[in-house]
Image (cartoon, rainbow, N blue to C red; front, side, top):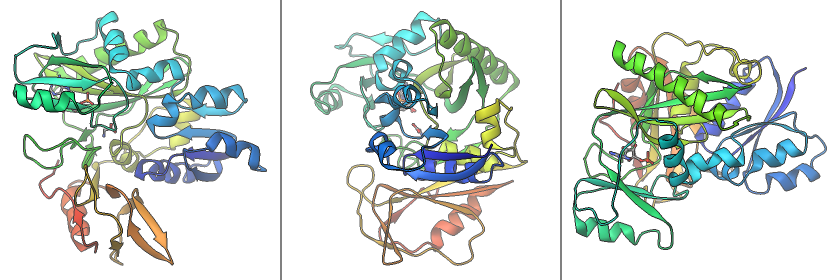
Length: 370
Ligand code: AMP
Ligand code: GLY
């Protein structure tokens, strides 16, 4: 039976998920549903969805998987209990430490060992973590999310990867590692963003591959030993340091823009993975994504620019912060568009395309490459 599907969320990640579902032989219709009030919408629509896929962290951390499941609707996403892996960095730290997974050591709050990292214990849209180099920075950042708990941990140095896994009927299905570009620019002190681009696969040494496999097996065991029984995505932010993978963070969803890179690279049917537990298969080459943001992002993005896309489009474009008015496109958020393609050397084509997009306050990273 082909399914009527809701994809909850309205960013570039959700657009990419929708497109992947539409390509599947297992789907009949796919609708993007705004995350606000999506439960209330159930009582208003004539057709209840057969499957709901939750994109962003907020509805997942609000417990929507439990709510949909209680109403008998099949839902892909992490349940409320395990969503704390993202919504509470302290919960995540306890999970990591209890299961003997490697991570940065906690430091006393008053530690003067710099650099060090401050992490706020809540959903902060990627802005609740900062590497600190002195006490002045520490004092300023500590006041940023007043009332929220935080902790300090040691600073780790190394290459980072994002590994997205899908827990399916008690088994972890792992996508190939991706790399995202978190900082706004190449500068060491540039602010963290949601992600300015991403690509997959990442070249790893044999040792890194083996250690990754060991880590992922440990993660699977740890989740199952605590009774994880949802079908949903777990994202591990890993750093290679001291000869092993250390966990920097967990998210309970697909990464944005890592998801776009993976889905661009994916060869087989995405819904066959989600619903039947098929192993992911990939195209040759590199799946890559480049984020077009608005100047001022991440603090105060300029909104309201008219956007004109070039006519000769041979890449995928997913809208994030875009509003349509009278048939015209306008920027309406920090990250505006995701440009994606799969090829041997994707970034020159993506940057060339980015250059041709007309948008007055356009910003993208010209330095990123595979
Ligand atoms: P998080 O949200 O915890 O992943 O942090 C966002 C980014 O901050 C990470 O991708 C890293 O680049 C950086 N970061 C977080 N924790 C550490 C750490 N202990 N050492 C070095 N960098 C870190
Ligand atoms: N790109 C990182 C994230 O989605 O959290």
